[in-house]
Image 1 (cartoon, rainbow, N blue to C red):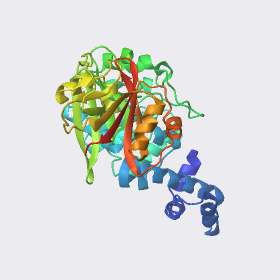
Image 2: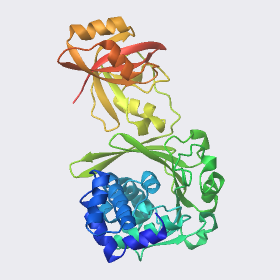
Image 3: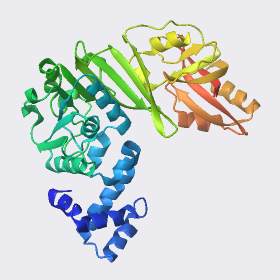
Image 4: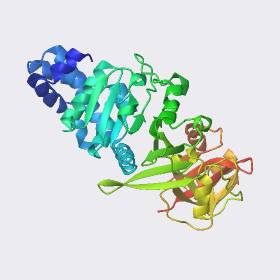
Length: 398
């Protein structure tokens, strides 16, 4: 999409095309395009409207009902922060006293909009002209244009003395190709600029990929990993005055119509005790694992590791926790395909879910090799115990 196409979508004719396209989203794209053209919508406008309708449909999972009025790009939607996460970040920034925030690399404006809703004045900077214009349009659609303004330019040139807080979400996809960038040194803005912000601004938070190497965490920063309904979605570095704990795992789980937040904190440097498998196995949330807080969770559950390098925990009693899934262990076997196949056959197990950590086996191939038949279900955990390949036959605990 270019600026002319975006401008066309914001006209009354464009709004009508978007409304018509919304009713066609999710269906046959060729039939949808034909329907719009039959209704008199010019081909270029129809294509732009259908693209937006498709992206808005996909964006509902991140932004909820607000997605219906947003302007989006594929790359921007991929990197945009989910609303529940952005709202929590904005809440924390506001509680820390931030009243004027620079959003350097604001993208489509997901985080800036959340900060504006929290009462913070936001100055967004975005290098891509179309994305910058979309962010401004999204602010207008949300009724937040007075609190969130956008300029198209170089984030590294912004005068941070104008604000009392900085948020930076460096681009992690290559312009033009959309391919992921895994080396932080290739981010835009550059990694040295991003980490240098904390030295200039006492209230700086940086959104990073959840696979960030712990060795890249700036000294004194709080590193937070965030999951939503079990999916690891991002990490953030809270610097200067915003740092509270060395490591934090924030887990958002949907309960009813909303989300409930749970936070586990610690040093990230403690090692959990090791022992043999016990009756209950806990599979920690990915945010807990990436934050190196498995030992802290083990302390809460009175649990141990079966292997010092594998993040499965074992305990004698089931304990309700938002930080891990609990399974009851019925059998612990040294891995043997023949023996496992016989056990499952004897129990008429025809359906299995397969979890793995520390195993080279491929779940899809193992499922074929087991030749399952029967009406019972089981959970198989492929792992190592004291360095030895092991399979645990389990059933979920409600």
